[in-house]
Image (spheres, rainbow over the protein chains, first blue to last red):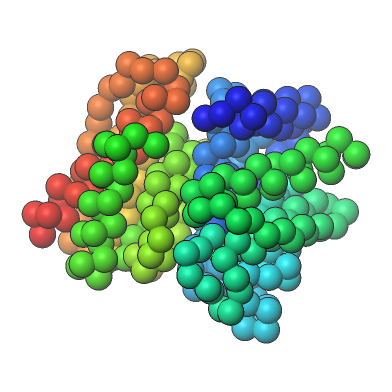
Length: 161
Length: 161
């Protein structure tokens, strides 16, 4: 675990604890790593309620409740799916906010979407936002970067509240 | 990531792919790390369907469906809860097998259960098994060891099938 990662986790931890905010996550391409990072430090149970690692299309639909229409129309790797994942996790877990990740870490092309294409979304009571970016590292590096980008987005938004 | 960890992940990957078996996980104390490890290698979408990171008692009950009776009678850190977590994840995700973790990684005593007390469970169509052990590392080391123990249990059982 690099110092950069620990610093970001520490900041998220501090903001959530200080503001008394609860969160949940819905992960596709990050495969559980985002939940892992958010629960790394002692005391994380004060803000972290639940994580959904919905790796398959079926899991996104059946477990999380992302609509079949969205999945068929936009694909798993899309802004629409990322937003719906975040919104559904927030509702199912009953938390103030939720963060979601979906993307193609590689090595292959997925649904015609190139390797390294990532979406991170965040949902709160007042609405949702999504960010799209492209990463050019290997699978493991991209996974970690996707987590850090999601956490950075979350920090920025929460600090603006 | 140590070579030992990569070796264990590689073995699980190989067994699941070869046997055409699907899995899901339900995690409490490992907080997403078990899902993260199981989806680390390319091709893991062939066997990994979904992971539930049910960190709070409410999430165990409301999202995963662990019975309130079990949670009240035995506590979150118990063999009964570990088994029910694995069974519920398997049903919800519709997979052949499921692995679950629950425990107290520390630093504090939880429900009167000492730090380092961990349960890992595995559920399949023919039944469930649970293992209890005590770890004496720090929080992060214990989390990783709990994941590796769960994967080792899974390998042993699947190789015996």
